Length: 282
Image (cartoon, rainbow, N blue to C red; front, side, top):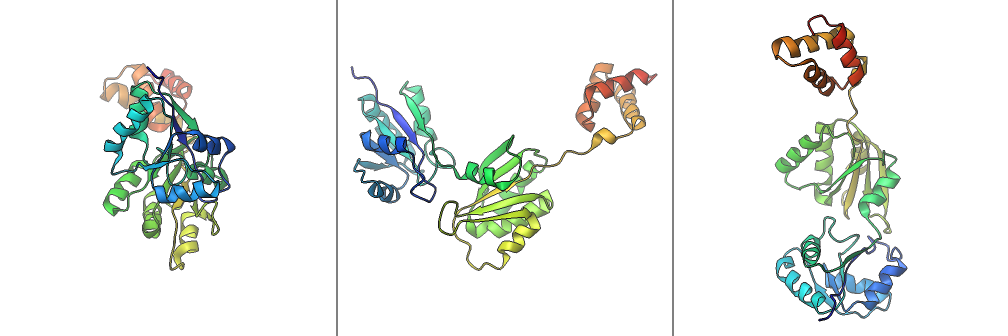
Protein backbone atom coordinates (compact mmCIF):
# COMPACT_ATOMS: atom_id res chain seq x y z
CA UNK A 1 0.00 0.00 0.00
CA UNK A 2 1.31 3.43 -0.95
CA UNK A 3 2.15 5.95 1.73
CA UNK A 4 -0.23 8.91 1.60
CA UNK A 5 0.79 12.14 -0.04
CA UNK A 6 1.09 15.43 1.81
CA UNK A 7 -1.44 18.23 1.94
CA UNK A 8 0.53 21.48 1.75
CA UNK A 9 -1.19 24.66 2.98
CA UNK A 10 0.52 27.22 0.78
CA UNK A 11 0.38 30.94 1.51
CA UNK A 12 0.27 33.10 -1.60
CA UNK A 13 0.73 36.87 -2.15
CA UNK A 14 -2.00 39.21 -0.94
CA UNK A 15 -1.37 41.54 -3.86
CA UNK A 16 2.22 41.91 -4.99
CA UNK A 17 3.27 38.73 -6.81
CA UNK A 18 6.84 39.16 -5.57
CA UNK A 19 5.63 38.23 -2.08
CA UNK A 20 5.94 34.49 -2.69
CA UNK A 21 8.57 32.34 -1.02
CA UNK A 22 11.06 30.16 -2.87
CA UNK A 23 9.75 27.15 -0.97
CA UNK A 24 6.16 27.92 -2.00
CA UNK A 25 7.20 28.07 -5.67
CA UNK A 26 9.00 24.73 -5.38
CA UNK A 27 6.00 23.05 -3.73
CA UNK A 28 3.59 24.43 -6.34
CA UNK A 29 5.81 22.92 -9.05
CA UNK A 30 6.28 19.54 -7.37
CA UNK A 31 2.77 18.60 -6.22
CA UNK A 32 0.43 16.55 -8.37
CA UNK A 33 -2.46 18.97 -7.98
CA UNK A 34 -3.23 22.49 -6.75
CA UNK A 35 -6.62 23.02 -5.09
CA UNK A 36 -7.46 26.70 -5.57
CA UNK A 37 -10.23 28.95 -4.29
CA UNK A 38 -10.46 30.51 -7.77
CA UNK A 39 -8.55 28.71 -10.52
CA UNK A 40 -8.60 31.79 -12.75
CA UNK A 41 -6.95 33.89 -10.05
CA UNK A 42 -4.36 31.25 -9.19
CA UNK A 43 -3.55 30.67 -12.85
CA UNK A 44 -2.23 34.25 -13.05
CA UNK A 45 0.23 33.51 -10.24
CA UNK A 46 1.31 30.23 -11.81
CA UNK A 47 1.74 31.85 -15.21
CA UNK A 48 3.97 34.55 -13.71
CA UNK A 49 6.35 31.84 -12.47
CA UNK A 50 5.98 29.41 -15.39
CA UNK A 51 4.29 26.73 -13.28
CA UNK A 52 2.07 24.23 -15.10
CA UNK A 53 0.72 22.04 -12.30
CA UNK A 54 -2.93 20.95 -12.83
CA UNK A 55 -5.58 22.95 -10.98
CA UNK A 56 -8.90 22.04 -9.40
CA UNK A 57 -11.37 24.38 -7.71
CA UNK A 58 -11.93 24.26 -3.97
CA UNK A 59 -14.16 27.04 -2.67
CA UNK A 60 -16.85 27.71 -0.08
CA UNK A 61 -19.73 26.14 -1.98
CA UNK A 62 -18.00 22.92 -3.10
CA UNK A 63 -15.90 22.19 -0.01
CA UNK A 64 -18.09 19.29 1.11
CA UNK A 65 -18.04 17.43 -2.22
CA UNK A 66 -14.41 18.25 -3.11
CA UNK A 67 -12.95 17.23 0.26
CA UNK A 68 -13.59 13.54 -0.41
CA UNK A 69 -12.06 13.81 -3.87
CA UNK A 70 -8.89 15.45 -2.52
CA UNK A 71 -8.57 12.87 0.27
CA UNK A 72 -8.86 10.03 -2.23
CA UNK A 73 -5.98 11.43 -4.24
CA UNK A 74 -3.89 12.04 -1.14
CA UNK A 75 -4.45 8.43 -0.05
CA UNK A 76 -3.00 7.17 -3.34
CA UNK A 77 0.28 8.96 -2.57
CA UNK A 78 -0.26 12.17 -4.51
CA UNK A 79 0.63 15.43 -2.79
CA UNK A 80 -1.68 18.43 -3.09
CA UNK A 81 -1.15 22.16 -2.52
CA UNK A 82 -4.10 24.10 -1.13
CA UNK A 83 -4.15 27.82 -1.97
CA UNK A 84 -6.62 30.65 -1.54
CA UNK A 85 -6.91 33.77 -3.66
CA UNK A 86 -4.60 35.62 -1.31
CA UNK A 87 -2.81 34.96 1.94
CA UNK A 88 -3.04 31.81 4.03
CA UNK A 89 -5.77 29.22 3.32
CA UNK A 90 -8.14 28.59 6.20
CA UNK A 91 -7.90 32.17 7.52
CA UNK A 92 -11.25 33.67 6.45
CA UNK A 93 -10.87 31.50 3.33
CA UNK A 94 -11.78 27.88 2.43
CA UNK A 95 -9.54 25.13 3.76
CA UNK A 96 -10.62 24.19 7.26
CA UNK A 97 -12.75 21.21 6.17
CA UNK A 98 -10.09 19.44 4.12
CA UNK A 99 -7.39 20.18 6.71
CA UNK A 100 -9.48 18.57 9.48
CA UNK A 101 -10.39 15.63 7.25
CA UNK A 102 -6.73 15.04 6.33
CA UNK A 103 -5.66 15.16 9.98
CA UNK A 104 -8.40 12.68 10.89
CA UNK A 105 -7.21 10.37 8.09
CA UNK A 106 -3.62 10.63 9.37
CA UNK A 107 -2.48 12.32 6.18
CA UNK A 108 0.46 14.71 6.66
CA UNK A 109 -0.57 18.38 6.64
CA UNK A 110 2.32 20.83 6.22
CA UNK A 111 2.17 24.66 6.30
CA UNK A 112 4.14 26.72 3.78
CA UNK A 113 4.18 30.13 5.52
CA UNK A 114 3.85 33.41 3.74
CA UNK A 115 1.78 36.56 3.43
CA UNK A 116 -1.07 37.46 5.76
CA UNK A 117 -3.07 40.68 5.50
CA UNK A 118 -3.94 40.59 9.21
CA UNK A 119 -0.35 40.33 10.44
CA UNK A 120 0.98 42.71 7.79
CA UNK A 121 -1.47 45.37 8.97
CA UNK A 122 -0.82 44.71 12.65
CA UNK A 123 2.94 45.20 12.49
CA UNK A 124 2.68 48.60 10.77
CA UNK A 125 -0.27 49.87 12.82
CA UNK A 126 1.76 51.22 15.73
CA UNK A 127 -0.67 49.51 18.12
CA UNK A 128 0.33 46.84 20.68
CA UNK A 129 1.35 43.54 19.09
CA UNK A 130 2.04 41.48 22.22
CA UNK A 131 -1.57 40.31 22.44
CA UNK A 132 -4.19 40.59 19.71
CA UNK A 133 -7.51 39.11 18.60
CA UNK A 134 -8.24 38.36 14.93
CA UNK A 135 -11.96 38.05 14.24
CA UNK A 136 -12.02 37.64 10.46
CA UNK A 137 -14.68 39.56 8.54
CA UNK A 138 -17.11 41.85 10.31
CA UNK A 139 -20.54 41.13 8.88
CA UNK A 140 -22.18 43.59 6.47
CA UNK A 141 -25.56 43.20 8.21
CA UNK A 142 -25.77 46.09 10.64
CA UNK A 143 -27.81 44.40 13.37
CA UNK A 144 -25.39 41.46 13.48
CA UNK A 145 -22.40 43.81 13.30
CA UNK A 146 -23.69 45.84 16.25
CA UNK A 147 -23.96 42.60 18.23
CA UNK A 148 -20.39 41.63 17.27
CA UNK A 149 -18.99 45.00 18.28
CA UNK A 150 -20.86 45.09 21.58
CA UNK A 151 -19.37 41.71 22.45
CA UNK A 152 -15.89 43.13 21.73
CA UNK A 153 -16.31 46.48 23.48
CA UNK A 154 -14.40 45.47 26.61
CA UNK A 155 -11.73 43.41 24.80
CA UNK A 156 -8.35 44.65 26.01
CA UNK A 157 -6.26 43.09 23.24
CA UNK A 158 -5.65 44.78 19.90
CA UNK A 159 -8.46 43.79 17.52
CA UNK A 160 -7.88 42.93 13.84
CA UNK A 161 -10.71 42.45 11.37
CA UNK A 162 -11.52 42.56 7.67
CA UNK A 163 -14.22 44.82 6.22
CA UNK A 164 -15.74 44.89 2.75
CA UNK A 165 -15.45 48.28 0.99
CA UNK A 166 -19.18 48.99 0.63
CA UNK A 167 -19.75 48.56 4.39
CA UNK A 168 -16.55 50.34 5.42
CA UNK A 169 -17.73 53.82 6.44
CA UNK A 170 -20.86 52.47 8.12
CA UNK A 171 -18.67 50.07 10.07
CA UNK A 172 -16.39 52.89 11.22
CA UNK A 173 -19.42 54.85 12.45
CA UNK A 174 -20.57 51.81 14.42
CA UNK A 175 -17.09 51.38 15.92
CA UNK A 176 -17.08 55.03 16.97
CA UNK A 177 -20.52 54.71 18.57
CA UNK A 178 -19.75 51.49 20.47
CA UNK A 179 -16.00 51.61 21.15
CA UNK A 180 -15.59 55.35 21.42
CA UNK A 181 -12.90 57.41 19.70
CA UNK A 182 -10.04 54.92 20.08
CA UNK A 183 -6.77 54.75 18.19
CA UNK A 184 -6.87 52.58 15.08
CA UNK A 185 -5.51 52.02 11.61
CA UNK A 186 -7.31 51.22 8.38
CA UNK A 187 -5.20 49.49 5.73
CA UNK A 188 -6.37 49.31 2.12
CA UNK A 189 -4.92 47.37 -0.82
CA UNK A 190 -1.93 46.11 1.20
CA UNK A 191 1.13 45.43 -1.04
CA UNK A 192 -0.73 46.67 -4.14
CA UNK A 193 -0.25 49.76 -6.30
CA UNK A 194 -2.71 51.91 -4.34
CA UNK A 195 -1.67 50.70 -0.89
CA UNK A 196 -2.93 53.07 1.80
CA UNK A 197 -2.66 53.30 5.58
CA UNK A 198 -4.75 55.69 7.66
CA UNK A 199 -3.72 55.94 11.33
CA UNK A 200 -5.23 57.97 14.13
CA UNK A 201 -8.39 57.99 16.20
CA UNK A 202 -11.63 56.65 14.70
CA UNK A 203 -12.93 60.13 13.88
CA UNK A 204 -9.78 61.05 11.95
CA UNK A 205 -9.89 57.80 9.96
CA UNK A 206 -13.53 58.47 9.07
CA UNK A 207 -12.58 61.99 7.94
CA UNK A 208 -9.71 60.59 5.84
CA UNK A 209 -12.01 58.35 3.83
CA UNK A 210 -15.24 60.34 4.00
CA UNK A 211 -14.86 62.25 0.72
CA UNK A 212 -13.51 59.30 -1.26
CA UNK A 213 -16.29 58.48 -3.69
CA UNK A 214 -15.27 54.94 -4.54
CA UNK A 215 -13.42 52.94 -1.91
CA UNK A 216 -12.11 49.74 -3.48
CA UNK A 217 -10.29 46.68 -2.23
CA UNK A 218 -10.50 44.66 0.94
CA UNK A 219 -9.80 46.70 4.06
CA UNK A 220 -8.07 45.55 7.23
CA UNK A 221 -8.82 47.35 10.48
CA UNK A 222 -6.52 47.30 13.49
CA UNK A 223 -8.23 48.74 16.57
CA UNK A 224 -6.79 49.49 19.99
CA UNK A 225 -8.14 47.37 22.79
CA UNK A 226 -10.22 48.77 25.63
CA UNK A 227 -8.22 50.59 28.25
CA UNK A 228 -8.49 49.13 31.75
CA UNK A 229 -10.22 51.28 34.32
CA UNK A 230 -7.69 52.80 36.71
CA UNK A 231 -9.23 51.02 39.69
CA UNK A 232 -5.99 50.80 41.65
CA UNK A 233 -6.65 54.43 42.65
CA UNK A 234 -9.97 53.48 44.23
CA UNK A 235 -9.99 54.51 47.89
CA UNK A 236 -9.64 51.96 50.67
CA UNK A 237 -12.96 52.82 52.30
CA UNK A 238 -14.87 51.91 49.12
CA UNK A 239 -13.08 48.59 48.90
CA UNK A 240 -13.67 47.82 52.61
CA UNK A 241 -17.36 48.52 52.12
CA UNK A 242 -17.44 46.18 49.14
CA UNK A 243 -15.77 43.47 51.24
CA UNK A 244 -18.31 43.99 54.05
CA UNK A 245 -21.20 43.66 51.59
CA UNK A 246 -19.79 40.45 50.15
CA UNK A 247 -19.50 38.88 53.60
CA UNK A 248 -22.45 40.34 55.50
CA UNK A 249 -25.01 40.59 52.72
CA UNK A 250 -23.95 37.76 50.43
CA UNK A 251 -22.59 35.43 53.09
CA UNK A 252 -19.22 34.91 51.39
CA UNK A 253 -16.08 33.65 53.10
CA UNK A 254 -13.12 36.05 53.37
CA UNK A 255 -11.39 34.18 50.50
CA UNK A 256 -14.41 34.46 48.20
CA UNK A 257 -15.02 38.09 49.16
CA UNK A 258 -11.43 38.99 48.28
CA UNK A 259 -11.74 37.14 44.96
CA UNK A 260 -14.99 38.95 44.13
CA UNK A 261 -13.53 42.40 44.88
CA UNK A 262 -10.42 41.65 42.83
CA UNK A 263 -12.52 40.57 39.83
CA UNK A 264 -15.04 43.42 40.15
CA UNK A 265 -12.67 46.34 40.74
CA UNK A 266 -9.46 45.05 39.14
CA UNK A 267 -7.38 45.76 42.24
CA UNK A 268 -4.39 43.70 43.31
CA UNK A 269 -5.26 40.57 45.27
CA UNK A 270 -2.76 41.42 48.00
CA UNK A 271 -4.32 44.86 48.51
CA UNK A 272 -7.83 43.40 48.80
CA UNK A 273 -6.64 40.77 51.24
CA UNK A 274 -4.84 43.27 53.47
CA UNK A 275 -7.95 45.47 53.56
CA UNK A 276 -10.04 42.47 54.51
CA UNK A 277 -7.75 41.95 57.54
CA UNK A 278 -8.33 45.53 58.69
CA UNK A 279 -12.07 45.20 58.30
CA UNK A 280 -13.58 44.11 61.68
CA UNK A 281 -16.66 42.48 60.19
CA UNK A 282 -14.47 40.54 57.75
